[in-house]
Length: 101
Image (cartoon, rainbow, N blue to C red):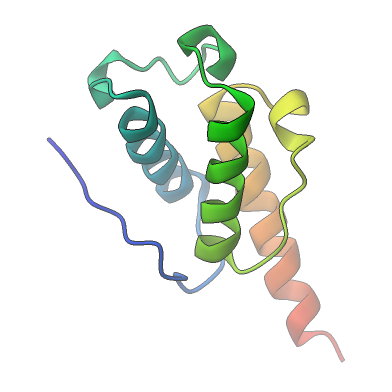
């Protein structure tokens, strides 16, 4: 089952599951592996994700989510599972900040 995600911004907040699906899609494409071969609990660097690919992923994530993503998040949240959860939290916080009065 293959899903295609565009690089256009999706209305925030995205939940962790949607971000996780997007990450799986992008990482599998960047690494040229089947999405089913990725374990969301394994560190991304264990699959050979290099710094250039990581920065590309960050840039695409910023376009998707509509806010700046610190590259340090990949160090603090090295798995697809943990990164998607953190990005969902930041998306929710980002969306809340926009509507604060």
